[in-house]
Amino acid sequence: MKKNLYYVLLAALLAVSFWGGRQAQAAEKAKNSAAPAKSAAPAPVKAPAALAAKPLSPEIEEALKHLHALKEKGLYLDAVKAYEELLLEKDSLPKSLRKKLVRGYERLNEKLLFSRTISPDTTEVTVVEGDAIYLIAKKNGTTSALTKKINGLTQDTIYPGMKLKVVTGKFFIRVDKSSNTLRLFLNDKPVKTYSVATGRDNSTPTGEFVVQHKLVDPTWYRTGAVIPPGSPENGLGTRWLGLDHPGYGIHGTTEPGLIGRQVSHGCVRMRNADVEELYDIIPYGTKVAITD
Image (cartoon, rainbow, N blue to C red):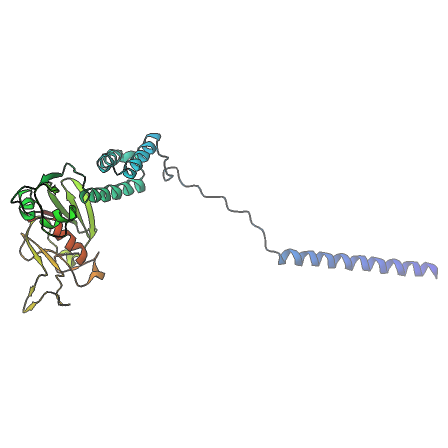
């Protein structure tokens, strides 16, 4: 009897041990399947050596510091030379830095133009008895409006002994149809870049032209209609700079939202504020090159 009881207890213990082990295995398996598998962190992608930014040479770093110091001191002529020397090192400059320098160089040339600093493209004129703004401007091949703006004059009144900064260099315009930009140069130096609209279907003519006509608030003589200045239908805007190519010119717009696109009938459109500024700067006879 005791022997039989012993075997019964042993069988019970073995059964409990077996089912307990199966339950533990099932729990462990469920735990492992519920937990998300941990994957190794992806290795950082290294840029190819050819695309990695090249460090600037100590000479370029020093030149940039020198340029900044010149601008801070207001030494514009020296700063212009520093820009030009840096831009000659184009093979040593990252593309992004070169673009930044080109924009800075252009802005500085504009600032120099409208400052009182005399540059190689300007001269200082001492007013004498009988002088007038328009006479001084005409003698030097520039405009009265630009001469007044440079010298901070709001009227035409001048007096003997007054010293005026006057532009003697030649302005030049380049229109790039591929980028819809108009770039203004004084001699060989870029002064300002404007966004423009050019002709749809490549209708803006290419070549070299000359500004022959200048009109304030032009009337638009369109086939079958005469549209007066100020009319919302007058697509010429507030200024007209007529080229020696009949029917074509640079003018303002009543649709500034279309600037930057090829949408005109063939002329070069500018925002009214921009064409008014350009109108005051350039004299008759200014050369215009239009390229694809």
